[in-house]
Image (cartoon, rainbow over all chains, first blue to last red; front, side, top):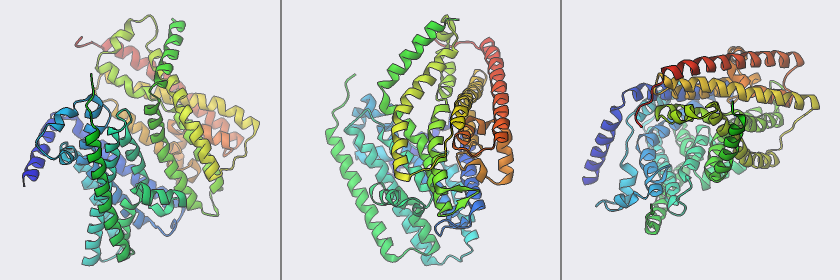
Length: 263
Length: 263
């Protein structure tokens, strides 16, 4: 309860700060439409040349794009702004101001995961939902309750995987404060824009087991089309929880290593 | 004009950037990834056959060269021009006895040196993994050099005049994001121009964006007939002149309009 209240006030403060810059509204709107437009046009161009790629057709890939944009929207809403303020460029570790965060009387992982919000990322979330719904209509399937539930469950697993990967890469900053580890995972996340099955075998293995950005969009998309086996669902769920535990462990290890920065 | 001072500045900048190479390697890695995504997607789409005459091997060749050309022509200095105007850094440049253009040129050259240190080995490694096929001739190689230089000049001055609009509008840099999207769609990143639908292909032919990135690559890997090469050079030269005139125009008016604030 206390944590929910804290999140609400973090959200309020961040939003007030952001709304002070009014021109940002239009610029963020422009950026959201740019990423939607280029994403959709890319699929139009690709499927203008071929009917299917490795079994993926336009509607299925469009649904996957919707999931990608949705995850990107959630990431931009709070995960990235919060973690970047610690581990990013000019972040608190870099500047040594993380001392003040350490002194706050609240769980540190909670604090660095939820404290900054970017309300305009909600544009991306809304547009992503639009893409997703349109893709479902194109797929022409009547969604049974079972499929919808398994889709939502796999989406949750993907959000956990995304958060854990970002947290793990952010935690590495405690070992080398000069390197922008979060940029690497942000760059690699772009690979989730397309089904992991379209990549060559060596890359597919990396994107499934080592840096699981490939799973994040492909698995929910498969759940939506009803082609995901229950066994795979269970594995994904266990894998995402294990990743969360591993990333949290890494973060706590990092905290113990933190020794402030002199200035 | 004090060219000796300019050269000293250029050398100084790249030596200092080399000390922060980790940061610039990360930037280069981030620019490489979207192109790698489309390299893999088109390879999967082509399969064992070919699309518009392009096989897997020739697509790989196209994209690997494009990765290098894109980094050679990308102007990171465009992004800092707006900040320098807003924060008043430009005051000092205006007082120095050499053209302020040298400050941007020095970042340009420093950037190319540092980015190539990263990108050439990585591209070579990728070439070993994915086995591209080129049919290079001496004449294509010779024509590539002026094409890539003009592509850089066009992209640099085009971004520069957009960035200089910061004299009037604080958020002019969002125009640079728009430019990047156009280069992605019409500059051969999303797909080689030959694979675009007819309507996009004719737009790409006319707009300047293809001549900023894809054109030199098409010349080098031999996708164009002699006539197409000549027409391409004509468009490229024309747009470069337009970009330079716009830069001169915006610069002279902007400096007259400029008033420093703060201190």
